[in-house]
Amino acid sequence: VGSPNVTNLRVLDTFLNERNSSDLVKDAIKLAKPYFFLNIVGPRIEAEARKVFDAFRAESTGNEVLHYYFMFRDYPELLRAEPTNPLYLLKNFSEDREREKYLDIAFPSMSIKYAIKSFTSLMGQAPTLSAADLEAYTKNEYEFLEKLKAVQRVKEEAFDK
Amino acid sequence: VHLTQSARSTKDIKRLVNQLLDQGISKLLPSATDRLGSKLREDLMGELYQLIEFVLLNNATQGRSGSALPPKHLLQERLASLTNAQ
Image 1: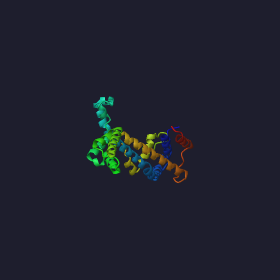
Image 2: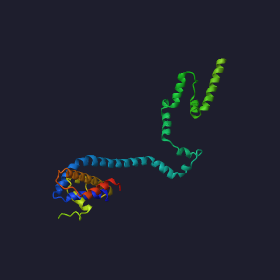
Image 3: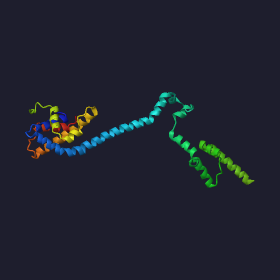
């Protein structure tokens, strides 16, 4: 059994032996043309265009990670950095985290700290906290609770007096 | 001079069919020199040959064109090539 392409051409060959072979094939091409363009050429060209587009997208993705590649190529010790090493911070650098940090500085009224502060003051039960207390809250919840208890104790003592 | 069936290679068959293509198809699928372009052209031409074959066989079976059907053994071979995955 020959390959599909070869047997296909062999069948066409029998029609080329006919007396009016050119008219036969021309008519067949005329009939096949609309289906060929609409259902075969169109989707195929679109698929090829998609391939090209994906190739460009891969390029742009490559550019996004290229600076990490250069960083680790030029500073390979970063890959071996441990949490105690200051270089570890550079290795675990997060753009999103940094952005949030600087947004808090630029727009303090939109920060989480401010939201907590305004919420607690709105409740009217928690004592007013200093910026240092809020900082401690974000750093260590346990320390904050201890301070809160201390403040509460001072207030109760003052009330008792 | 017409080639006889036995002397015709697949290349000759393609050349003869390509000579009958109209300008629309010829312009859309020019013979490309690069590998990707020639692969695309080859694939699309393969599809076109299959469509032409379908139309020719359909017309022959319905007696529209007045042409004779291909010999039975060739049709059986063609069917086998389509049903058996290579």
